[in-house]
Length: 198
Image (cartoon, rainbow, N blue to C red):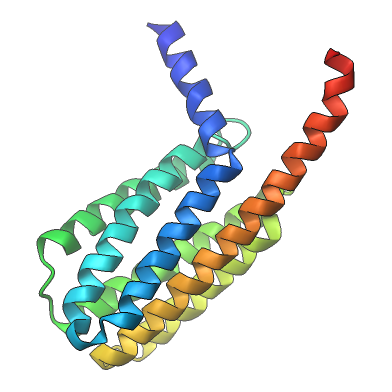
């Protein structure tokens, strides 16, 4: 039983630290942001569906990525909790796509605030992480967007759709750049280790 758990943990560690995994999640964010830009006529419904799908993908991504963190500290546990919250919130939005603009705005605002704070903490704490700078930038972006919506909850549907689209596209491209930076770092490490195993 313990061998199976160890092998599963090892597999999750490899996936969570893989640059292709980061790239895939970045592309999901770009796709969700693009949907909001091109379907603003049904903005409220599109926001709930697109952001709900992104939240579920975000939860899966965070859960797997948590296993790539060194050690078994509080950052891994906090990230796993955030992953569960993200999946639960995403499922709720998918099940209730027709919400009031106020409820949707506050939900998005608080999620951005908590998510951004977590990413900022990860970027500061994990100093050896290859894409640390991109993680900090994404965290600051999420905090700024979350505060702006919480302070102004009376935002219009179109304005919320455009803000979400901008955030998802920016966040998505940030992850894409981070993925290629991670790929470059991985290739350098392999190039150094290859002669030793040759």
